[in-house]
Length: 157
Image (spheres, rainbow, N blue to C red):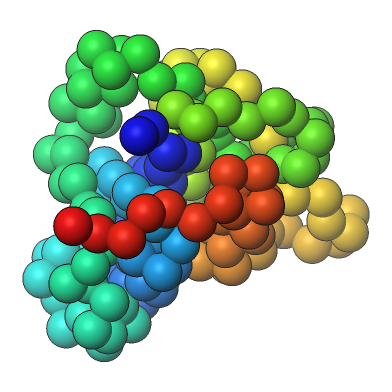
């Protein structure tokens, strides 16, 4: 059964990544980390944030954007970029079960060549004076919408 997934582009902060892995484990969403990350994926802070949920998390580590793109295009999955540069609110698009929602790195988002590859772009509406929302909170908001539309994932085998 194909389910929506969450992807992180070169994340900087292990605590955010661990929290998102825990979120994915609890809700049944696969998490893809597109490297290089700004930390070792075996980092203690990642494990502390993910707690004991890392054992049931579905994590795929892609060594580069190119390897992720090769996998994604061969799987025929649509890429939805969550970005402050979009105009469409994240709750106003028609998600598909095979979508991958991509979040950029905490310090810099995604480069233009990654932005250009997205099939759709969504944003979290914010007050004009606000710059951005924490990565883990943003992923949680979008995951909540995916959960509302698709329900929780199956229990791991």
